[in-house]
Image (tube, rainbow, N blue to C red; front, side, top):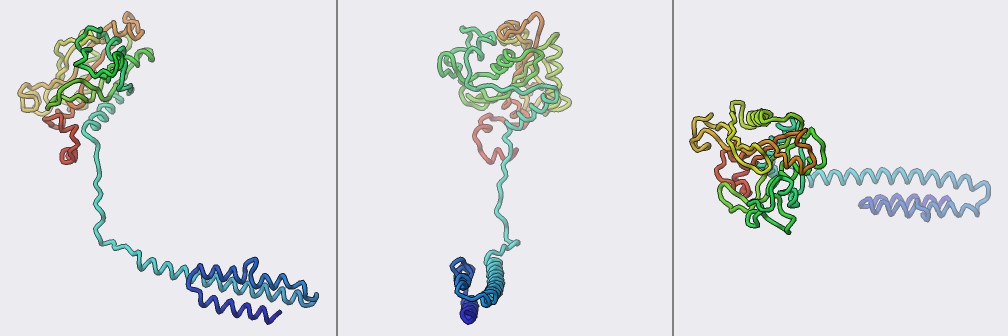
Length: 339
């Protein structure tokens, strides 16, 4: 049996020297050291030996097993080194070769303005409110003191889905929803996309973006409105910006006004941006109409409020010197990369 063990050792070492990769080495390990391997068969045949031979043969088998395991492990490490060396030669990187050019995107001008406006009003203690773009007519019109015979409800002026559902024509419905679900004091702005049946030209689009603001509390007055808008105008358009009110009419505010800002390009002297007038029309505003407060379950005898709204595209065009609104929606990289 000792001769058989010596033969197993000799054959295994010989075959090991002929292995070309780890796969063949593993197969050799199974052949000689596995559960059904050559050395294991020798151990199973020890039952035929006498009591004096068994410990001698057992010790010899274990010695040969340890030797073969060490040789196999060394051979495996050799194969791993060879594989690593091969990969280093074939997968090397030329660090002097120019890298692939990465084209970084940037925020759209409209998104930039919305983010800036939100930051300004958050700093003044406002919250940001959101609502559905597919809106019910009761929120888009009725609760905002716009009766069924109002021109804004004409089928040619608004995108109706059904008689009672439409694409919102303003973000004011969000204000109505907030007043229904939140008790005063209320300070919110409502940014979002709105839709109107306008022909596309340099200053009009059937889809654009608005930011509307609403404050409802006790003893709110027109002076609070003007002070808020002056603060916003200075933060958004420059510290020297001035603001003026012109009388106007909106069904959901009374009194109502159009707010103009002094041209931040020429300082009010007159230029092509303000068309020589020195002022730029910015937004509509006013004190919340008592009927609107009543429609949203707020007592107008106890509470008052102001609201305002402006088009984001209008501010973007004025601030960035853009003379055609269509440029904001055409996704021309040559235009957008400027921002």
